[in-house]
Length: 423
Ligand code: FAD
Ligand code: DHB
Image (tube, rainbow, N blue to C red; front, side, top):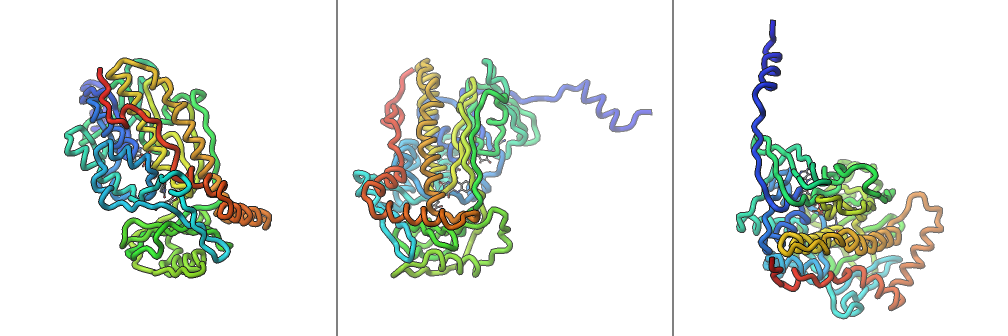
């Protein structure tokens, strides 16, 4: 006799599953800053896109991450039509402090780079602005897309399969943009051997807090101390963002607010500086890693942002690299889909990787200069202090830090110049 299960199994072999099929020019997997910005740039140039995101809108908008935008990133966000609130609420900074041995030293970033600066504006706000603009544009943005998989990109039938609203769907397209972050599905779908990977783990992590208190400093403080690294950043004139170096195995439950503030006081201590405490509204621990996968293209699958590379956060480069990647990717896709030219697409990976490796080095260098290594026998700390004295005492060394901090200028693409690329 047949059981109910047997019956259902037999039926499923007879009744074909209904798959809702649609087509677009570029299927974008991931609605982080990379995917959303790519969608905005392509939309402005008349290219059809569908953005698929695994999480809810609320989750995507609440994820606290980066806070420093290079001037080039600010320019691209303006060009994408989402610069208005950033212009009003963002904080323009022209320098940073390096603190060590009880003294704060200012690096006059703008003076050393011909007037370039950075903007303090949270990644959460960038994402909120991009989502709002996308929804106004009416272009498709789907949250809670489960079980995404990518296929056919080595040939000429790229497709993204996923489930949404209880239905199986397939999205056929000309190109797939893998903007799904470090843990996404796109990079692992590239056949082994077609991609090379470099990575480094660090013996420390960052514990970050948001606090409802006016920043105790006018510009960011990167602090080196025997107790470990600390960073005083901010989100607005009334919200502070602070980080301390911790062991990667630490659990956030073991860090009371009082314990975190005690470490911040100790590590940020310097002559004339006093830290004001306030209610902590968010706290979390982030591991640190360097990672690069190359090339960033496999056929019609193009990787961008954290899907292709990760940096430790000390240089504030992760978000900025994602912005640079998708600026170049948008130009390449517009060139291909509107003007029929493969030139920029063929150069996409190499163009990105040049600045990716510069940011990899800078992030590694800032990280190793400012964090205390638990395995160090004391020699490393002498080198770190020597390097900090050099960077704060030599205009040449300070200029090198400043140039990297504000970021390489983005190549002057047609997109950035606001030029319509005619088909
Ligand atoms: P993400 O922001 O990771 O976005 C990827 C998106 O893809 C996510 O929304 C994800 O939900 C979605 N996704 C994943 N898998 C799928 C799937 N299968 N289907 C559909 N969607 C999928 N940088 C700094 O400069 N300073 C910092 O302080 C800093 N802090 C950070 C803290 C954390 C915890 C992390 C993880 C990163 C931090 N970074 C920081 C780095 C910076 O936030 C990233 O470089 C930036 O978010 C990269 O943007 P992205 O769009 O490439 O990737
Ligand atoms: C912030 C993060 C960084 O990685 C950094 O270098 C500076 C500031 C921030 O979250 O504000």
